[in-house]
Length: 161
Image 1 (cartoon, rainbow, N blue to C red):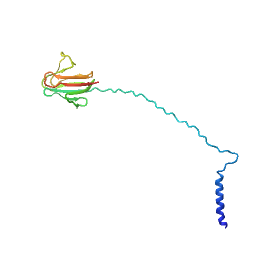
Image 2: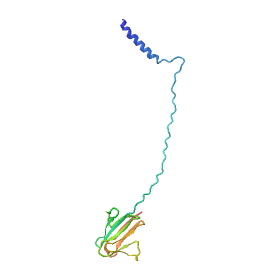
Image 3: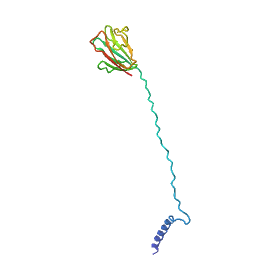
Image 4: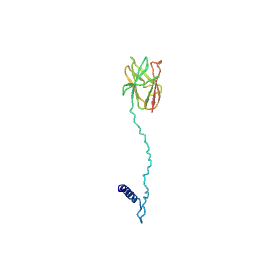
């Protein structure tokens, strides 16, 4: 019977040790943890005023080739040497751009501005294989004719600011 007594004694000993940690010592009070106020940072949104940056545009140059058969037949942007979209004889450019009209004919042709960009005394006769250029500074819509070719439709240039 002795053999059965050892496990019972061992079990009582373990239970008493475990329960000893749960007992309060007389004369002491349990300490409770008081919550401390935590400080959280205040996040405020500051809006920054966006200042638009004005991008300076480099003026472009265009060549308009004219002849007696097609009139104002083709436009090339000379900086990149590429042909420009040119429908219904209308070219859209920006203020500061330069247009050069080049005569592809065997005789001189006279370029007329319907808005009077140059005076009648200042005739813009363009000799064979030569050109005349004009810098457009004011936005607007301008039309041009070839004086010698009355059946050819006029060219329109729209200048944006």
